[in-house]
Length: 217
Figure 1: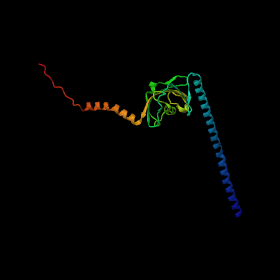
Figure 2: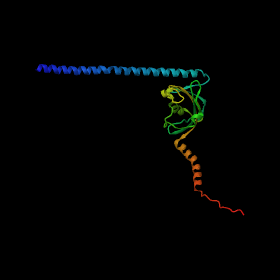
Figure 3: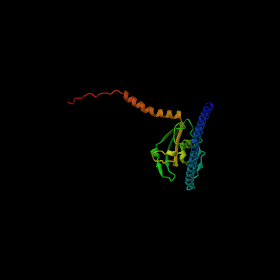
Figure 4: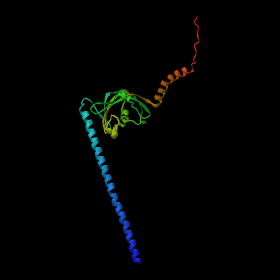
């Protein structure tokens, strides 16, 4: 009787251990496929970066008269208008006032300056295109710069859901009109608004007089 109970316990333990082993074996391919997916994803990204860099280098080669500088963030830029007098550049806590337009690498206009309107950007406090966020901090007042942004510094995998396609490198031409501290900018805005407010208040407080009826003889 004891032997049969012992055999039953051993058989039960065998089933449990066998089930655990099967469970572990069943999970192993998932981690392998996950690792394989990651490797493929990394290879795709490397190939994409290499392709876009090649496209940008072609733009640079086709414009030998233009001096392009490489940033440490993986984009290139050249000056149309350069300010060599000032040494101040926008920093966090400033408000940058700029205009820009966007073209594809062939030079075809995607968004004009008029479409994008004058920009008011609170430096490092607003969510804008990564390339612009970094590039503006390289600029001095009144400079005009052409930035060659790979897609990872522009609109990335999703594009902008309008005119810019997925994984599209772009040329972004930026004119930095001015920048100032947030305090100075807000004070300037209030001074602009104040005269208009005073005129409206004055009109509202002026009593309305009714002309008397006149009798013509």
